[in-house]
Length: 272
Length: 272
Image (tube, rainbow over the protein chains, first blue to last red):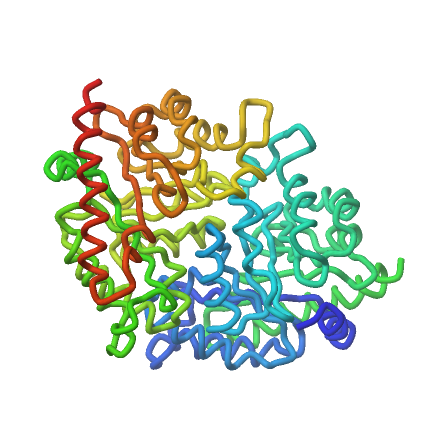
């Protein structure tokens, strides 16, 4: 999907919501567990309940890998079921030496046909570059993550700013705003203004709203650019709004509240 | 597998060789491609040809993911085929927020029963900790990788040494030498002496010998400790020694030459 097409979807739906599809058998509504493929049944119901309210879906690979081959089958079925209008993100946080990253790119962009994959920056340029060069496909590079452990290394002072700023600066010569986004956690809302100075035109994938406590208004105020430039992810807050038979109805209610807040924020900040 | 058991295997075989099982359909001997499961057939032949010469096998997940569900089946068959005496490493370079890393740990340690998994450090302590606490299982944390892109971030100067040194220092309070190893690329042999000052007792998983050009003697001279403390990996140099029908024979010849060199180096440096 092109950046322009993604922006059009955002305008059409008045939403920059990304729904994280992280199905956890321990948290799934009990009545689904008797079905043949509870994971796909759950994802299908969540997609049906939220597709008109979000522009992207982001399965986190860990939740599928944990189930072995059954998990991969459920993931493929899920991916086939997501409407073509939606941007699909493999939250995989991959990254390896060149010939290996190329295999991951094949896996996610050709074998599975995701639009984007999250990539870890630690191994540097030749671990990331093999993911470029697939038309309409995106690298989403981890820059500033939403977890507490982001303090350990991402905030270390280097000779030129903090490590996450180095990642933002150096990587801008690897890709461009048409094929690269950054992960910036909502748990650091005070940093969005400064991040937008370094990377004014890139889309930012923002986890950490909801279960992790990030603040959507601050993120939107400082993070939004003239093409929105934000995909804000919510996973647990939507998926597990209820663990009863009403899970899809309740998931929709949470997603709807987020979409309505986003509509207001788009109105307020898009052309500020 | 415990550290002591691994060291016993090293002494018994006079080898600290790890064979990387990175099967690439583009490089596989042509006559295997007609078989039902060319990947498993290839791995099986490589394992048969090298099992008495190495102490560990390291499948890189990318090569299996690139083949979709067939790849995961081949991986599981391979893992079941590796003798119990061998240390098994999922070269997966995973790492995510806590609840997600826990799912990866389940996938690799319980679903697939690997002994160890490689983990990326960028997201910090809470992305790594969920991998600990599985008895006999290991985290192998990326510290200094063998690729040229290691220059981008790993060598950045921070307030307390270079980034990879910070990774070595900080992470030592997360695990211990009985459940954590480090990836240190053989392409930086001059740094092994200094790395051993920071981490004297940890095993180091060393890629970059062979196809990537690292030097085994220097690595062994400066990297070996009193329990050997090294697992030196070779993938392409062994797997693709020949792409003809003699691939397994030629793979064995390369592995044997490495094992013989290791026997000499163990003699020379183990009790230095």
